[in-house]
Length: 398
Image (tube, rainbow, N blue to C red; front, side, top):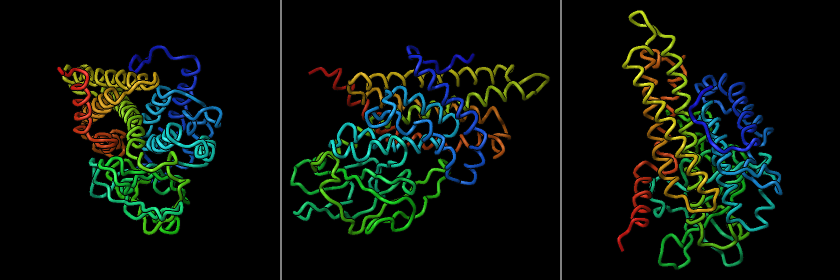
């Protein structure tokens, strides 16, 4: 039995759920992933299967129809799904972040309105923070919501890099709201925007242009979101009061970073599986290339990185599950796992030689997918800034 990515201390229920997810990945995702990815086709049948398994409600409490599982359980399931096809894990990641934000910051009315339907996958979540000109600088967003004084708001602006932009029906959108606060971060508000799935003008004043063409991360729809006189109400302000949007979004991104780390672990272990299998089948100079020291050393490095990233991801999830602040652990896990993922995928690509460059081989897909994890939920440099600031807090001399 494979020893990599073993997680100590799981309950029987957790182990059974993970076994079901792994079986689903092996039987329903891996056989079709390459074909769907090359066609940039949305995996509708896979998504339907995940709905039936309850994946969309993994962390939603049982009182709202979910499974009420921990962040660790969720992350381990994501790791398995990403092993099959990273794009599929992206479909549930943004959904999960919106559900998390509702659970932690939503009003009772908002929770009761959305969470039961999110648990079944009827309502599909997406969150929208980035814009064309701001990148990692969230303070530079320009999308603006203006109150009319009678409980209504008008939103104007353009959002970018919206995963599930076309297929989602509920989007958590970060906007600027002029409240006269000195801090720019206290002048931000998150709105819950309901919309019809699809492209074009999906609601009056709200347009979802076509999918953004990408080098990898295909199948899932990544879009812009354009507001032009879009009307909403106080009832759609997350938490019921303006000015808390930045902190709500950062809380969502924090658990999202655990998710990205899990996705990187899944892609990395799949690259390792492909590499070590190919190395035992391909022969040069009269023996399998796995028997050549250069390749054996490469496999050893790959396995060590796969294991280290997994354990750090597990640690970050458990800290959050324990109710503690985990921005340090989540930043470290996301940083290490995404960097190691890129390195493991490249090593597997090298092991495959010329065949790795062929679209017939799965490693070609992984080679295009891994770079997204280096920038998703904050670049490596952003993670290093977060980690460095927390270290100076914890080890300060003052």
